[in-house]
Length: 366
Image 1 (spheres, rainbow, N blue to C red):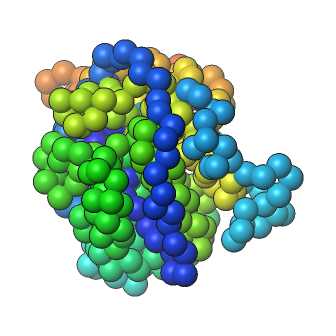
Image 2: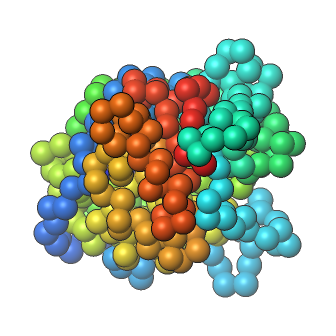
């Protein structure tokens, strides 16, 4: 599920794995913020839930420590010899979170999609696919292994999509969230995400151990990404502090958001996965060193792409998606001119104006 100006959060419980339910007495220092990177609901409109869906301080906290790898040791289920995928600037990508029945054999993902780019010439294929952890609907809990295998057979890489800052009712682990929330003073599940009544903001503060619990949930899910063979992970809904208390139901400071986001990045690296920062533009300068690529929705539409150049300067790609026409009347793909230029080198694509992330429409800028 996608949200303009935000990133992540459903939970997963591994078979035979029990998520800790203890409360923590730690608390977060509150700092003011008021930076917004766009409407929190724009790209969620018109998308369905889970895989049938569409359309960011302190690293020394207990949460950050628990998410980090033991020095010199590989995490369980990872290969100590396999090199972590390093995404390349300018790589073409596809964003398909809504499965298509015609491609049931490959988890609903069209791995043969090919389209003529804005810059002209023959059709081009994606080198990177961002797809949901699950095939079908999230409630089934069926890993999207078939899609990952098909993507790899095409010589491409697969990013594992999941929410990390929200609680979704149609995910297999939803009742675990509810039990924890009820046992801890209803301190975890907040307001409904705008436009998505079946999804609620998660509280990433840690005064009752919420963040510690969420990170254990995310670790279980990341292990599922590894099991399915993914190369990287996208955590969505990771800028609740920007959306604000009136929207989320929780008072999240900028420092708390940084603590959580850095812990998520460390968690992905612990399992040898590349990790992408979804939106959270106001914190890019503090997070670019922790993440391997950026994923952004509608930075051209919202005139906020400049800050993402920090990723390009660091040799890390920016995978962007635009839904609405941008660039003036008669120029539905006007944003492609700068995006594909040597001055920007963004990997930007145009999807449908309904914000649904099916396999098509799909137009890469280059």
